[in-house]
Length: 428
Image (cartoon, rainbow, N blue to C red; front, side, top):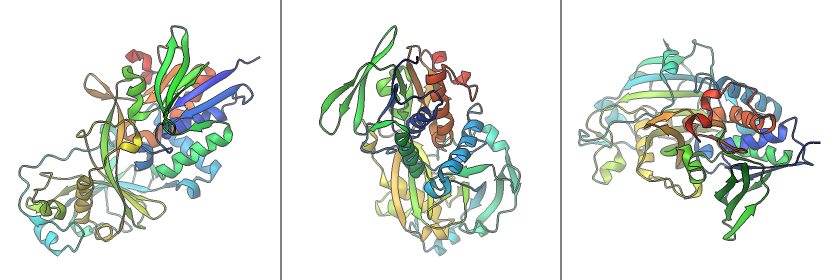
């Protein structure tokens, strides 16, 4: 007869939610014997990066050992649970363009974020988000700017490169907030218990394995304990270090803006040359110069449900707060994004703004370098970790969740070979 299992998932973002979902869907899951509890420190599911991400899915993402499985599972989940309607699953075009915005063009713009002239020679260089690695950039093929990409100013674009073979879509998307919350709801329906405002403070273990987990109930201020735990999956994104310091997961803050705009379905990477004397209007009003010298590279994703999402560069100005609901947004950085995009997209320049926001991307750092995510067993029996997915957490969430269910119930990964992501290789 199977033994009882008391499984706890730490984290209610995409990785924790998909882990809980696939645990409840595993063929060995027996609700009469197995308890699955998800603990999320914030008041709601997906309050961190999983609710504020772009939602891009791509076969050209990384790491290669995980991407194909997860991309396929996204399609399967959408087919099974009405993903197009529930969380906006769809395919979309993807490409990159270079553009030069002249002084005359700036003068003619009637955009929010017009700008003025005063110089930016002392600004900082734009720092790109690590979305496209070298292998992905090699897949870009020069082509003709699509006619239906009609929300950018074609007259200033010098070149357009399409991702993958022209006309062959290698890219899809979901609305990350809707996707993560829907998957968490499906996990609940499958038998998982979800506690929000439950901030994990301590994992208790011996050399024989995990024993219990303690958390602060933020609603009451009480410290509570789940005893007789058999398995713990730490999937707390950038907060993983708070409960498992040796995981070396750091948070990288990224700002984004959501426009209320119904635009054609493209994910667009940009490289924009602005006049050296251009200053965003909000910076000029504060008596500041432009924050960036040289080119800027905002990314824009048309999204389902009449949205367009744009993200800027990452920063390390503000340390990671205690919980996701305490993340601070620097509105001026969001206004920079709006201002830069307004120089080449009259449609978005005129669009209402639904949200200005920030989140922290979880990065696995070793020897000062970003490494792949940690997925699998740790050196403590019964303790697993799934964290460090940087900007590809939504894309790689289903694959990670599926694999974690296999680690717990089967003793190892079956759906993909993720040995190179083994936490034990890093003494975790």
